[in-house]
Length: 202
Image (cartoon, rainbow, N blue to C red; front, side, top):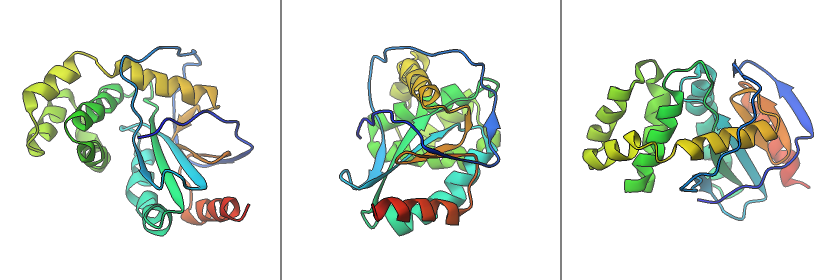
């Protein structure tokens, strides 16, 4: 888990994505500050993904593109992946789903990523009740999970992540930064591969 400082994007590629940006600024101080990442902490290339659990295009990235990136670059130590929340305003359960992943991660770090994958895989069924059902599925301490989720413990963290994204020019999901190269929306894997290879050769 590592905190990533905001940086300016220098290139923009626009494809399909979810958008409903209200244009407001978000400035909050989270009570608990945590960031989940995968891969080599000292990797030359950092991919930062701003995503919404109810966005169909985010699910496409998570289920189709990310596995290729993980196989080719993350597991080989060339790239580190950092996940950031960006719940879209008109997605009813996106905010709570993001909070739920952190409540799961409290009990075991791997459970953050397990819930992350399962939410995207079955995003049409996301609801408050479904989040508790996932906790039961993972054999978590369900009472502790529900207490965490209902207390809004991670609400400000999720909002802070969204505010950080706004500061970097994010207005839709998924938005992916490969170091300072910004991709808005679903991307062909080859586009991302070219950007990664360009960064690795610098």
